[in-house]
Amino acid sequence: MASPTVVSFLRSVSLFKDLAEPHLVSLAPRLRERKLKKGEVLFREGDPGQEMFLIRSGSIIISKPITGRVEQVLARMGAGEFFGEMSLFDQAPRSATVQADVETALLCLDRDSLQQFVEVSPRAAAAFFGTLVRTFIQRLRASGDLVAEVTRWGLEATGLDVENR
Amino acid sequence: MRSGGTRRTKLELLVRQDGDDGFEVRRVPSALAWLQLRPQRVDPATYEVAQMPSRVDGRVTFVLKSKLTDRYVLLTEPERFLWEQMDGGTSLQEIATAYVLRFGTFDFDLIPALIAKLRQAGLLTLRPSSRLREALARHRRHALLRGLEAIFHGLERVTVSSRRVQPFFARLYRAGGWVLFTPAAVVAGAALTAIGLASGVPLWQNAASVVAPIGRHPLFAIVVVKLGFFLTLAAHQVVHGLALIHYGRRVREFGFTILHGFVPTFYVDVTDIFMASRRARVVTAASGALLHVVLGSVCFAVAVHLSHGLTQAFAAASGLIQLQAFVLSLYPFCFIEMDGYHILVDALGLPTLRHDAVRFVRHNLWRHVADGRVLSRREGIWLGYFALSVVSIGAFIAFNLWTLIHVITG
Figure 1: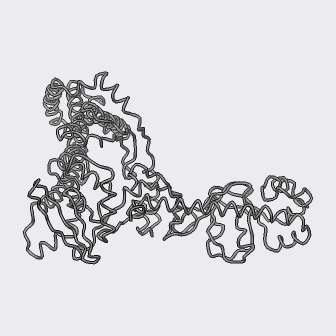
Figure 2: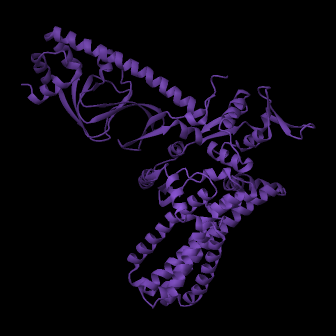
Figure 3: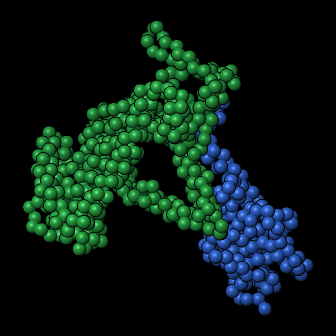
């Protein structure tokens, strides 16, 4: 039996905005809840990954190791957003490290549960994947912006005169 | 080339703590990284410098040649000065300050342009050496030290400041602050000091009985005396700001911070005084310290007329602390860049004296001694500064210990 609060939360998640109520009800029991304390690392870059995560409450920081104990902050995410979906599809190790910025509650969707959802509700799955692709595109654009921003930081911080080299 | 004033991008970095899941997110503005860069000349064996005096206008230029890239760079006298500062240990902020002290003016595009020129010729490398990087390079094996470092880092960020203080200081100056910079104020200050010091003699002779009441309420007394002193530190900075207004310069910032993570203090940005005369710089630096000698004298003059008790003890202790603050502020030999230090480096024309002196003693002195080489004038000044500072700190600690023992034992 799906928890009404989980279904209500899923309704507010943009990833599921095109899914009808019955599909949300069928998806909800497949999600596993996970809680993180402030500062707790959920996974690190290079870890094996089998699941994606929805942020139910709190916020997380996605970072990538640069040197020693220093990591670059790639993104911050809050309630209603999702992450970790890349490993779900390409089965490659995690591409970044994720840690809780504050006390955070997550809902996990693993590969098997997603597969079952696709088999049982193919039309809902198509809507789900459509939204997922649009989110990927947004994140790809954001990555381009971040690269430009970091390059600008490097130029400003080093005073490198590129124009007149 | 963009000018220094347009740097504003911030990089967000996550710095992980040892052994657990804790972390801290730090935002590093590009402007801060730029100011903390420490340009490093290439190895002396890989370049040559030749002097080219001009018979036309008497000016001297220098030709710098990289033996590795076979490139030549023409340097003016100010550019050569900057080149000499680029030792890998001095930050761009310190280099810019040194330049202003030496030449009295500053062009914001000069240093970036020179750096670009030197880098193109393969004569310079840049070492980003911010506090963050240094802290990261440090070992943090001990939990206690790690905790302390985290506390210091947190406290260092406790800063309350305003950059819109010029109108406040201008109003304060017009409302009476100008009096402090008149000959009458100098005479009155000198008279007060004389009276205060004369009052201090009998107090000192009976020091044990005068401060005895403090011993009955030690914690309360320390808190009250320190709090009073802390407020005078704010007044000290306000006087610096008024001096800037007096010389027609701009007060860029006033605020409160915790210096090095453990010294709560007020501060005022007096950078604009570099654009004024040396006299203005000396008066600005000395004015804050002189406030302490006047306040200390007033405290002594009051204390000597009070009857024996806690109030007299407070006044006497406050007077002593104010006089110590005066000496500490104006005494340049203590490895701390306070007012007296700035006056000294201004007079010597050696703006990076402390840094150079410490580096010389740490890295070059023993080689000089081993080789039996005679010190140059500049090296002699560095060694003198270092030695005087070590002796002074030792004497300061000894004096305070002696005073404490003297008071406790009666």
